[in-house]
Length: 336
Image (cartoon, rainbow, N blue to C red):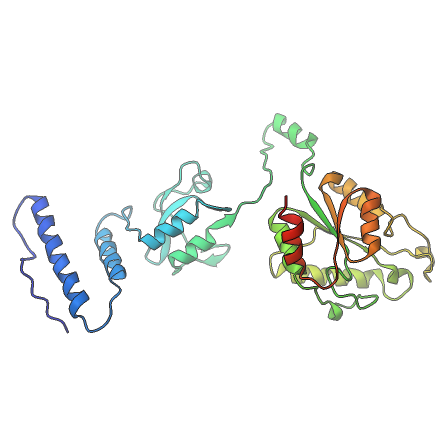
C-alpha cells in the first residue's frame, strides 16, 4: 500500500471554477507522480489516465464520451482504404452498443437510426458485451465496385431494363481438373476433391474484387459411362460448399459431356462445346452479357489456351505446381 501525502486540499469553497480546476490538476499530478514512482508494480500510466478521463466523462450525459488514442486510430481506419462503416458515432453503455449520433447522410441515418438507439444484435448474433475493437470489425465492410439503382420511378425502371449491367464486368473462366482441383483421371467422387494450392483463396480474391467466376470443363467421363451427370453435379455442389466456408463461390459451372468415343448414345458425338472449341465460352458471353475484352481463361492444358485463342480472349497457362493465388494475383490481375 502506498500512502500519498497531498499538499493541497481536495475540496475548495472558491467560486472561481478555473481556480478549482487548477488545484484539482495539481492534486492529480501529485497522485500520478507517486503512483509512477512509488507503486510496487509497473503501471501502464497511459491506460490509467485513459481510465480516469473516461470516469470523468461518465459523470456527464451519455452523449459525452472519451476516446483514447487507440480507439481514435480505429475510428480513423474506418475512413481509409477499402473499408466503410455503417456511419455512426457510438459508445458502449450497459454492455450494449449505443448510438451517440448517426453520421449525416450515412447508411445508419438513411436506415432511421437515432441517437440513444441500442444495437442489440449483428447478423442475428447478440451484440451484448462486445468490446470496441470487435464493434469496428463487425460494423464495417469492404467496398467493392458495383451498381445500385432505385427502380421506384418509371424513368429509372426504363434505365434498369435497357442497361447492360455486365458490360464492364470482368469474368474469369477456369478449367476444372488440374487447375482448380487435382486431376485423378475422371475425377467425380467428392472424397477425391483436393484443391490445388491457392485455388480457393484465388476464387475468394476474385469474388471480393467483384469478378464473375466460372468453370468451363470437358467431362467426357459422362459419355464414356465412367460416372453420371448427377455424380458431376454432386461434385460441383461439394466445391461450392467448401468455398462457402471461406466466403467464396463460383457463379456457374459450364460443362461438355460429349465425346465421339462415348458409349452412351446421346453423348456420343463431336460438340462445339468441347474445348478447344468455343461453345462454352460463347454461352458464358451470351448469358452474362459480357465483352470479350473482359473475359479471361485459366487452364493447365494446351486445349484451354487454344480455346481462348480461338475465341480471341486472353489466357494464362497454369503449370500445375505453383500456388495459384501467388502467381496469378501478382502476374495477372494486379497489373491492371
